[in-house]
Amino acid sequence: MNPIHKITGKSWTGLLGTTRKARITRAGATFLTVCAFGAYGVAPIAPDASDLPVKSIAQDLELPDLAEQIAALQQDEQQFVQEERIRPGDTLAILLQRLGVQDAAAVEFIKSDKVAKTVMQLKTGKKVQAQVDEEGQLQWLRATLVDGRDNPTKQVSITREGDKFYARSVVAQLERRVEMRAREITTSLYGATDATTDGGKLPDTVVAQLIEMFSTNIDFRTDLKRGDRFNVVYETFWQDGEMVRAGRILAGEFTNRGTTYQTVWYEDPVTKQSGYYSMDGKALKKGFLKSPLEFSRISSGFSNRIHPISGVWKAHKGVDYAAAQGTPIRASGDGVVDFAGVQGGYGNFVVLKHWSNYTTAYAHMSRFAPGVRRGAQVKQGDVIGYVGSTGWSTGAHLHYEFRVGNVARDPMTVKVLNQAPMSAAEMARFQMTAADMTHRFALLRPTGTAMAVR
Image 1 (cartoon, rainbow, N blue to C red):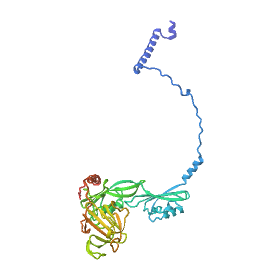
Image 2: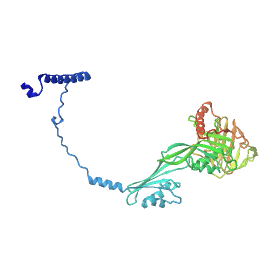
Image 3: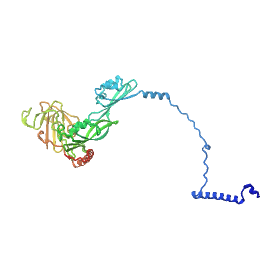
Image 4: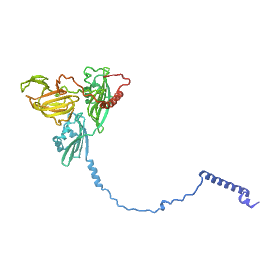
């Protein structure tokens, strides 16, 4: 037997065949690799991070003063902020007690300081905040004071500095929102305004404005019936997520017995003329007041008479209103002061020039209101002076004249005039506001509602 066969158990032919197969297999794998990746190379080996040089830096760090930090935390914890709302029957002592204030000096300051004492003018439900220390000593107190719809809302603050207190009042920064509400009359007007649906109860000031706006067309005591509807768009003012007060109605729509009445508030950005208008741009406010005094009686009319001082029979070219000394005199219409001073028998005398050729005159004033001077602009209802007895007068009263083209007319017989009509430019600006409110009304009305607008 061949020795090789004994060693391998295979012939040379078999061994060569196996070797050839292995070579072919390795060559095929290499070929496929080249075909798949094109070419290949060996990347250099990056140095290990442990082989890089190491730099050591030594720095002294200042340890925090733990005692100081603990003392600061304790001091913070000793300040307490309390918030309360004004309740019916609250006195200053009761309110401060609920706020945790035990500070006689603070109580005395609030009682005596003109600004600080306004805190007690807050209405029920309004918020008051105060911070006291662990002994009840007042650190600061804050409240928001609402003073009517047309007056600015004020932020009143009282602060302690050492052993003294300081109070200040600044105009509060409020967020203005526009709200829309729709209501249907089922029982009464107030039943509809008090409804808790659709945003809840309407503010009382908004309801009062609504009645005033439509009272010339609707008798709210007798004309309302079930099914009447109204839509209203109005302002609200907010602070820290809480409503502080309601503002002016921006637009109102009232449907009574099938007829719809609409009104929109408009202030011209150029002329600053403002008021409520119908949707066709006609002012709802009359051009002149019936009387420049709120409470008075006519003591002498527009007629011929014997003058009380000269005794001469002559024409009395105005109307005399008897009133107490110092009674406020109101401008009967929007206008500009044409004269303010002393003029003969008229005494202290004011002449207002209105639109077109209308003027009004006010005589025998005791004094003029601040800011009343030639060229000053006034609005209807502004106080321009006070009743007196200056000039040729035998007692306190107002002599009032209404002139057309500088000719005196009897103010009691002159037909009540509307405000001056808008110019073309004013009308164009107004129509943009009216269109916006008309769109809002459409959103508030039930779908498919038919209406006859007046």
